[in-house]
Length: 307
Length: 307
Image 1 (cartoon, one colour):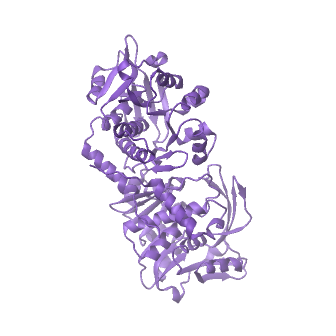
Image 2 (tube, each protein chain N blue to C red; image 1 turned 180 degrees about the vertical axis):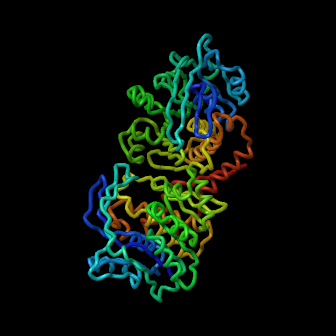
Image 3 (cartoon, rainbow over the protein chains, first blue to last red; image 1 turned 60 degrees about the horizontal axis):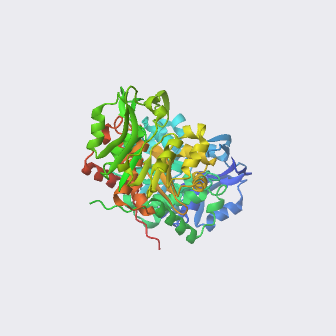
């Protein structure tokens, strides 16, 4: 039984108020796999890169226990590239450049050895491609988590709605929840989105934390207040990777365990934003992760006994 | 020993996307006293109104256990009036009209019977007036909590800083914390503000909850996700009233008890925004308050044991 992660493996060039990078390795699946690797070691990756993608970065993923048999390397082609610049508040950014390259014709192929997939994490991708992955699995996974973004709501809403209907957990941000539902109130937005198929909805609010909804319950996890958010790139994917990695390891998809998974995901995301790209989450120690989790406990726990 | 609340008692006219009111009773001290009254019954009010202020509203405060001996009624003058219109997101508003009236010459007088003040809540007012209240007390209260706003940072920063230096707990919103400190990061803003005098800082983030800082610890309380925020007027004052009312009742000003006080304050604020003005918090039952507190517990509590 294993965790299957599908999404982009990419080059990013990032500019923040703190500095800028040359091309560095990024992409949703990269962050998802790295983050999940702190919780489970059976991770299978499906993605695509060009021949310009460094072998050492593939090796880095493998060292984290990631099976890269499903990572297509297209000779004569180039890796997906994104470049963006964050504004001073770090909550908004401008895309400076997007070169789809290998992503334009990406046709995900699921290796036979991946068919034991129990937990499926669909990183942000063309909704039809996400759906094809689900349909390529012979047995339905125990849990399918899907991330997406406003871009697909703008240009492929019908495809997106079809895909959303097939998943268990949808993760989107607050603006996207409002766009998808047409409701301003996040409670009403969640109620509406939960009628579209998913049993669980996670609304990511960046520095304001994350909400988990099902039909009857709601859970809130804060983001850790940090002195500086250095680079938010990949924070949402790192969150998702920690979330599904923890669930895959514990094999418990109850609401109570999802709460824990969200705290672990939030802790991983709080590391991610402390440095550029994947730098901070490539080599985390168990002690600093435990310490960070304890900070979350201290941040929100209180003791009230109602008489 | 008692709680002393100082602040405006006013008329408001409010317009939200859900409707509009004629002149209704509002003002920081009104919300503070009402909210605190659910926790403690020894509340003394210092404020000022004109002769147009309805006797029945004074009676309503008295029925909540509020001593109005310190409420000056100025014959031939009019009560402070504010009118505002909220935008669709409910997080921003335009002031349509402000008539200071009796507030222009407000000189707070502390009745002798109020000198047993143990907990002092300074609602948003001219900083020099807040300071005069502190100096009019023969014994320093066990805890002084002060609310203020960006307006005084714009026009009376020097006075404001002098007053802030004299209090134990400062409550401001996130934009005000940034303005007061010149720091964008709320963690850095808090560190700076805690060098200005207060031992505790509460940063109110509206629908995104509230943060409590001291030199060593930080606590976060979420706002309850609501289907609709009907009218945010007075939510911050209701929060402050619940916070100090709970502390005054328990007489425990430890960090752990302040956490509880913030949850009770947040619960009171979550009621406040459900109807116009004070309507929702005038007549709350113990059962619905307990139920709301339980919702906060369910919203944030999780159980992680680190191995």
